[in-house]
View: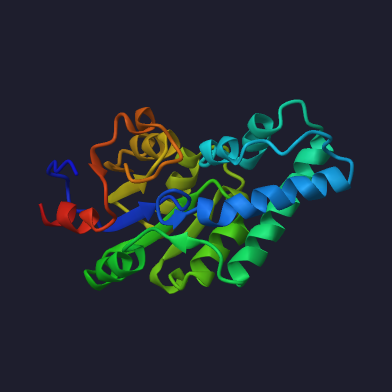
Length: 225
């Protein structure tokens, strides 16, 4: 962990996938199911793309994800993939699949006890983002769960701006694992904490972050410095 001196925040704004939620623990099985169904419905005629391709796209808007994962696909296939992904993710969450990164729940509770407001800002779908928080028992810790799916924002910069305006937030840290998180922080004048423990992106994605953490508990150390 790098330990610069950062201004104390009134709020922390978290990405979801690759930051709080270890997405591959849910997505590997879901990915296979999505493409089995697309083939059965004659919307996709090729072998299932490598799940690594999907994982590497986490943090993008869904429309952009499918263009990367199945280039040349039809709009009908991409729209159906949206629906199937959400359906199968929620079904998996409901039966206990997927897990948070180590120490996420405990650290969020400690942050809440310290009087820090907690938010999520994700490029995912509304029901997915809220579903992860609910099924993993952390929903009540957050002051707001913001998603591109709910607010139809074109970028995470816009989503974080909306969140801050809605809640009158004057100072916050943006915490995430992708370049879109760094951009969202910088675009709103916020210090950005890069989650180097996530494996979905490349280290270059976190260039420009003000600090890097290798363990979620490092957030508490950063607050104490």
